[in-house]
Structure formats: structure tokens, C-alpha cells
Length: 126
Image (cartoon, rainbow, N blue to C red):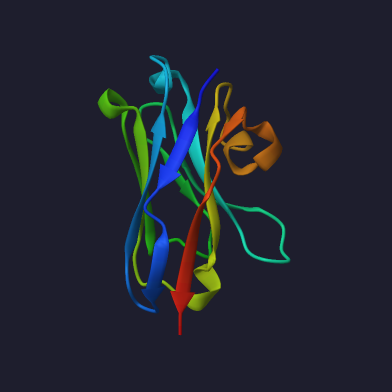
């Protein structure tokens, strides 16, 4: 079992930045690939970013590529999402998730993740 806790959300103006953190319990964090998803009001949850167990490979949704950066520190059992040049359409609840058995394709699929955090709200004003 893995417990994930997100933090770092808040209210920012368009063009601003936030860094989200996701802290994981246990001693097996490095065995999991990690992903970030988001869900805006009235919309389905969508893939944002993911990285491999070592952090050596990263994947991004087209909508955030060039603005968001995912990283991880396995020694601290933490994954991060640095969000720059934020837009009002980035407003959503952001969730981190852990996936044990992974491929390039499964990292983008919500149903393939094994554990989820509770989410943190990001609001971007115009």
C-alpha cells in the first residue's frame, strides 16, 4: 500500500507559477512510476505528466508541454510538478498517482494507476 499526499496548490494570477509536491509513504517509492492528472469542474480527469521510476524518462500532455516540468526525488519519496506560465484553463484539482507495472502507453492512462492522492486545488485568475 502506498499513501500519497499532495500539497502546494493555491490561487495565482495568469502567467504566474506554482510548484506542487506529492509525498509518498513507505520504502518502495522508487519502484513506482509517478503521474499527475487534473480535473476541472464539469470535465473528465485528464493526464498531465508522468515520469519513470528513476525519473530519467518524462511524458507530458500537449496542453502543458513547455510550461510544466515533472521531477522526483526518490531519497525524499517525493514527486514534484513545477507549473509556469499558468493559464486560466489550468484551473483544476490536481492529483498525483503511482503506477507499479508501466509502459510508455500505460503512463498516460488513468485506469492503469494503482494509488491516488486526495488532490490539491489550483486556481488561475485572469
